[in-house]
Amino acid sequence: MEQKKETIVRIIAEYMDKEESEISTSKTFTEIGLDSLDIMELVMQIEEELDCKIELSQELNTIDKLAEYIENK
Image (cartoon, rainbow, N blue to C red):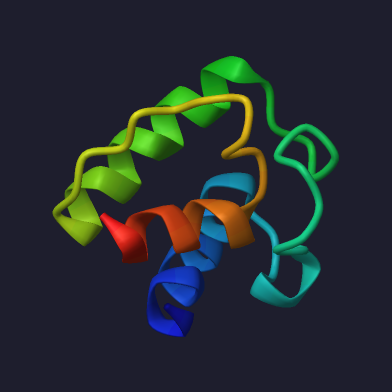
């Protein structure tokens, strides 16, 4: 799961033009500065890079939860 989490952090950091160390995996996507459009664009990138399908829900609101969801699919 750590590798998936690192990949998600890298994708989000690149998208936001931030350092990976600035991205908290336990804060909600809104708390790290993403809006719903950003999240949809990032989900598409993550799906492509990790070769998975993500069905977004209110519960998948942090990088930690998203990585766990992808790992358990």
